[in-house]
Image (cartoon, rainbow, N blue to C red; front, side, top):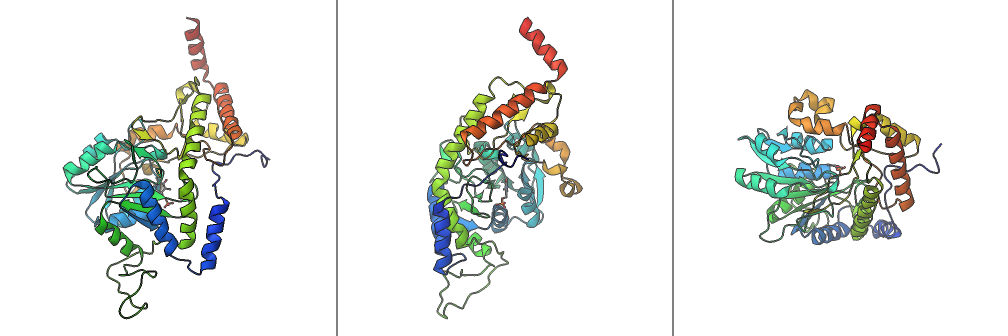
Length: 404
Ligand SMILES: *Cc1c(COP(=O)(O)O)cnc(C)c1O
């Protein structure tokens, strides 16, 4: 029905440069991890200002790899947020550790005060998530980690190109505080994509080489660098590894996506500002949180419905947008609401703010392949739906308010 006008929740931006590089890779005869992955790692490290970068085949793999390489394991606890994608939590389970959820702050990110309450003698690591591309309060998190001797692994799946206090997420310049590992996602819907893929940055040389080794079966040498006295056939398995390496076909995409990332983010920020302006004065909607300390990567534009002013709920709002040809999503269904995590007695009581916010959030289309006209179309439909859906009691109150 809406074939012509439907605005999907996401459309990736793949250009001729990416297509030519993938073709060149296919013609080169080297398909798996090789020279293009080495270049992608080097370029990404330079972009983020990180001493080391290890390419992996997903952020999920990256989170698992970082936890495993740091030695987090059975008997350990890892504190993370309830408002995240499932794999932030499942990767903690993959290493045999226990995930502990600490509730969110007003901005939707994990609240450092809640982290502090969740820390026990078993806590080994904190995994903060920069929700929607808005950096967490890292200063407070690093301070907690320092005081309690904990690792910090940032889930930066939304935050490629975000900045915190002037430094890129992933930056680890000499002397400045930094996390042990920062994990980025290049999944198809993220700010830059390799179809599937991820990157881990770290300030530690030994951790980088351990993650690299574990990412390829725990082998002492990878295929590209394999050369020993016995020839290129020889390798040794020195640890229980994984199959988490990124292929050169994917890195061919990543090299060019990375070059475009700044312009992608500029466009995302411009569209987010347009939305903010077009929603100005609409009391049924609370605009997405921002922080003067940070550059938002604007991976997602997530306004919050002021439900008490409305006679529809979030589901009806989403359905109404769909009927008008607009795709949306919700980021995220809080972890304790999934049957699998609920069964593990992941304490929903400690996630009250996440559960309350969940009812109000909707992710609107926001990506560089959108046109300004489409942004305006989405905004005017949101406005129209919400203005018509004003709760009767609230309508009376606002009318009375404007008369007095
Ligand atoms: C997308 C996402 C992941 C997983 O990324 P993959 O590359 O698909 O494995 C992890 N955490 C968050 C917050 C995400 O949005």
